[in-house]
Image (cartoon, rainbow, N blue to C red):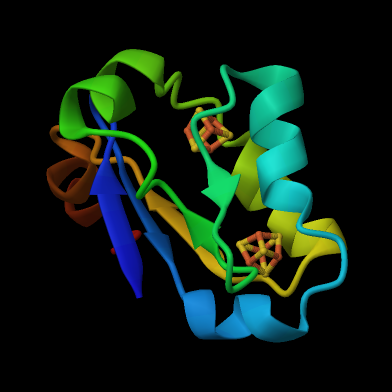
Length: 97
Ligand code: SF4
Ligand code: SF4
């Protein structure tokens, strides 16, 4: 499991799913729609190991392109958590939680 933080979200990637992924669509999407933060390591898995923490924070645009690309063209391995302050309280108030 790979987990890293961008400015206001956390990206979790089940990299065990990358082994059978033929498209590696996440990295292409990050390059096309963001700044190419996400790469593929020599085992064929999604990785940011070639970046240091400062680069991850600076280059991450929180665009969600990798998650969408992986869901539709990869193996559905990426989950991005975006905390929204007050959302749980709002849902409870509306009986939606
Ligand atoms: S597209 Fe998804 S499954 Fe494929 S390499 Fe990227 S994260 Fe892994
Ligand atoms: S959210 Fe955007 S910038 Fe961040 S890793 Fe995914 S594609 Fe790249």
